[in-house]
Length: 341
Image (cartoon, rainbow, N blue to C red):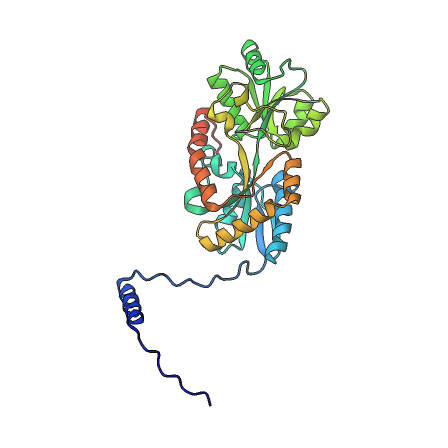
């Protein structure tokens, strides 16, 4: 039989510690008891892509989802929900249960441009959306058809001023970031050209190749092969810094155009419903960062013409959103673009 141990003697120091702990508990200042972290994910995770299959967002989502399935030991199921420049799919994520089992991969225009362009937006960013993690930055490339006799940004602006309304400027949609930049050029530099909106990058680039439009801004991913073949000519990068996918291409700022608008670039990022617990947001962001840091993902993103991001967190992404959102709003207002939706 195990002998019953006598109660431990209360030494003066032990008695003081117990009394102090009781006092703290009574005052409500006791250190909180750490709650046991629940396992995440609890089964399959739905990763909503608010754009059509085959596009850059979809390609990144499928590769990221595949890697997260392995690292978190749960299937990540891709669901494409296109429409209204990402608002339909984003709304589906926003209205899902806030448990981390439904997330989305968006292009930043969903949160930075849509609220200022569309007359009806089914979500409010700060109220409804948890910004979890950025996965890649995407720079726009200002390019021209080879028939346009310019080779850099300074030449381009000078040519526009000397040839008002001669060039057609293509964008991948009314209210898209290239459209806003086109309006900025027209209104601040007195560079007159005709805006031609397309439904996506593919038809825009196709008409640039055919010289139906002579100027456009699209992703490096959509244009790189045509630059290499000499069928389109890159003029400048719309970004804060050069990209590893085409390091020889200078930014607009490097070419003498230092306005904030020429550093405003898009990004791909993971979102979730706003009420998703912070612990789940952090765990998800850490898992995404680990995946994005792998050589396989880094190589894929760079080959697509983007810049991989492996150190994003909810706090970093929210801070970046709040820094740039007012600038996007100002640019949208300057453009005058409005879409009934």
